[in-house]
Image 1 (cartoon, helix red, strand yellow):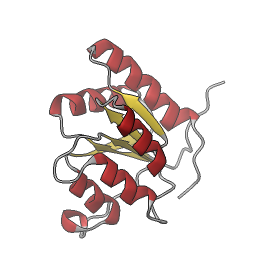
Image 2 (cartoon, rainbow, N blue to C red):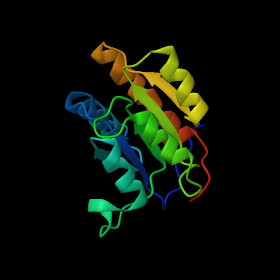
Image 3 (cartoon, one colour):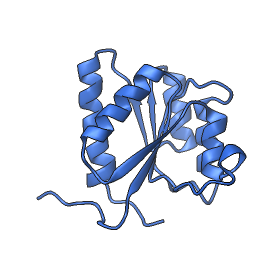
Length: 151
């Protein structure tokens, strides 16, 4: 039996991805899911933290607290592992699920991400159709099937 997300809540996904082609694939696939959500896209780690803390260019904006962060690890200005540490080390943000969505399959990155509290670690496949299928499954899991606490 399929269960809809809470009808009066829209889930915001924060996509932290500097590769324009990868971001486009994520945005296109998450849009196609037809679930009650929106995707906010930022291209570097510092901007991600500005979004989450409502500082910098986001200080005067009403930004939604994300229900999910999709985090690339190889980012300009501030790396993904540093962003992950900042999220999971903050009492106000630590409960937000963070999925590392990255090209790195390096054992050290996987180990460090889990030590810092990542909720899932997914290596982006090189084949576009496999990447699209992965994103569909990922989207359904985190936006429909996974139970999350209310903010």
